[in-house]
Image 1 (cartoon, one colour):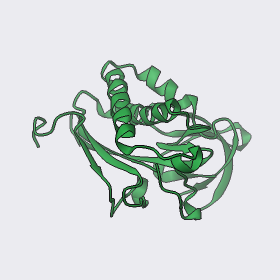
Image 2: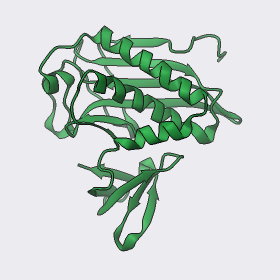
Image 3: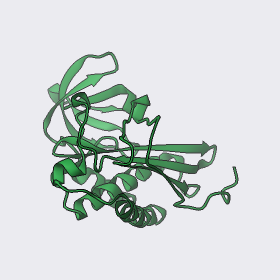
Length: 224
């Protein structure tokens, strides 16, 4: 696919998402016309494969910053890239990268934000901006705010400001340095403290006996 076919920050938005998905094939359900579900195309040929995690940081920070600007309370970033408000999920992000031998070619950034939906399945531990703030939001205005913020964060990424992006991502990391329960790939529960996220996106958890262990996305789930 030629990199000139689609311009950077080309946005495809839908009012009716019929087959939404999240990390590891999880479902994302959205009521018609009530939420913001969109994808953004980005030429990421400038990004080396080992630095893919910083794209995740830039996107997560973009949504986080916009929600903070409109005064959504008690925000946090749940590893790897969910945005929570009052410990409930209000945004899910899924980045699909096309990687060639010499690095990332392009990325499609999928973002779903619960905006004006009022009722959720309790098992999803989700909420919406309307439920939290008590008011209706204009979807188009919110979309524009996010794209503008995303452009700014992607510029930092292009400028190689990896440390700045990493620090901003970890600053409001959900459950950091707090006792937490996790489930491993075998379904076993264990306790630990989230300490950091590595430059490759692995979660560092301090276990019993002061053992610091790193987990990939498929290896552990944070229970909350």
